Structures are given as C-alpha cells and as structure tokens.
Length: 135
Image (cartoon, rainbow, N blue to C red; front, side, top):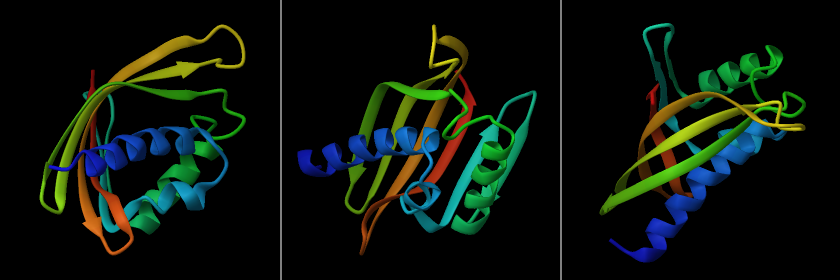
C-alpha cells in the first residue's frame, strides 16, 4: 500500500462529500466507475442504483427534493476514516454526519456509515461501490 494512493482515496472521499453538497453534478459523477453501485440500506428506506447514469439521475432527484446539493443547506461531514489498499482495489469505511441548516446553527439530522470500494482505472482511483447504512 502506498501512502500516495491512500492520500488520493482519502481526498476522494472528501471530494465526494463536498460535491454532493455543491452544484457541479458532472464533477460529482466523474468520481464513479461506469458500473458503480450506490446502495442505501436502512429499515426505513432501501435503494440500489447501478451505473453512473442512474447514480446521476438519483443525485439529481435528491437535489430536486432539496435533500442535498447547492441551496439545500445540507452538508455531508465525513469523520473517522479508514482506508485499505490491495493493488488496484481499495476499501474505505467512515462515519458521515448529515447536517441540516448549515447556513445557521447546524443540526445533525443523521449519521450513517459509508462502506466503499474503490478501483484504480486509467483515469485514476474511482468509487466502484458505496453502501450506506445507519450509523
């Protein structure tokens, strides 16, 4: 495992959080592999989205609902992160705090765990799978 690869993946986790809260959906989606999976697994709601196009559509839907993205005043705050690399594959695990009303006094509206899989591609490290579970 190289420290450079670990640093790249740590930064990628953070970039995805910043971009989920921003307005550049194309930049956000560019960090996923073409065949990526996005899985939300909770007793209240479950979803599985496969492929960059469908992940983009789901992110656009969350933006339309005001759940994330520019103007939603929602922030994804990544904490406690581990990264393990094995050749061209890596896993990462972290807690994520979802903050609402970020323009004033932030309120924690949820906590989840991201279980991620990353893959080295010709375009660098990309997110291949993200499973989101209650924290």
